[in-house]
Amino acid sequence: MVITLTEQQKLAQKDQQEKIAELFNAYKNGVKQLGLFGKAGVGKTKSMIRLVNLIRQWDNSIKTIIAAANTHRAKDVLKENLDDDTIDCYTIASLLNYKRII
Image 1 (cartoon, rainbow, N blue to C red):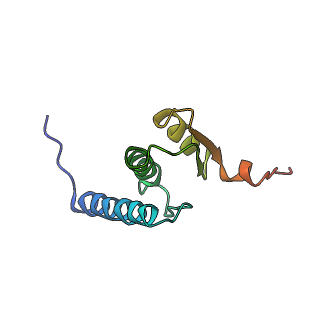
Image 2: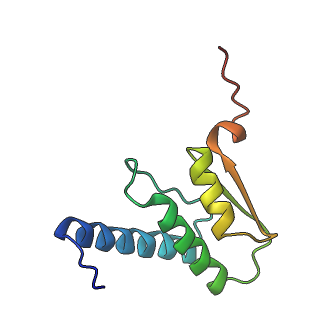
């Protein structure tokens, strides 16, 4: 089975690759707090997984990485794909100690 990408998907992949490269270069230049923002479904979680793996390959002296995601599902995807003692995954709400009052 041959899978073909739409033009929109090709552009999205190119945008993701460019953003990963931009964030990786920022890390190599000393920026240690990185963020990736965007609409739902644009590939932020998968891009962060690729970025973290790149950083870990380049800098094996890292003791801890903290990853935060908007949703529990995104946090779970990060944790599943980055399962390692050096990575802690949270939702943003849990890092802010946010409790929803009903």
